[in-house]
Image (cartoon, rainbow, N blue to C red; front, side):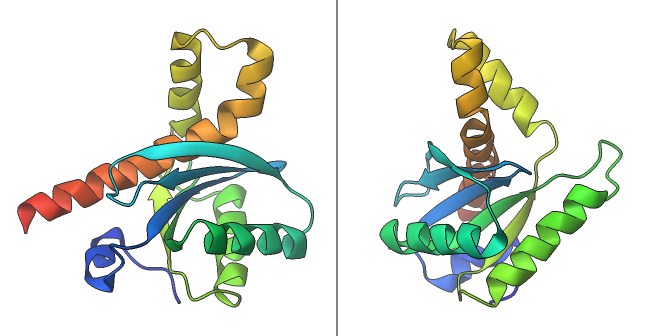
Length: 158
């Protein structure tokens, strides 16, 4: 399925499915999963990046195991809103995933998600070593929570 806008999710009839949030990095993929009510994002262990075919196989396995209906993926725009090489890499990753799964993807502006995730981990007094391990999944949870909050907002306006 192609990339869709977040406003299209409620019309897909996916209330029995979870939503996954992804923070695509060069070395890891941060992962977070929603609850069935689409209210809370929970970080999961990161995937260590290898080559695309291995990364895709692992993600497809998670999609199946976690009953995923939609994937929200952070789009790492520059602070001025322009697209750089990381945006191009993310779009290419999603394009390649689209040929392997019917699950739709939604791009979500992830500017400052890692900063917010790190701030949250600091507030919880997580050690530097543990922060390094958890930061990508915390960023994925931040991305997913923003999308879930938007979906809740859309539901209230209908």
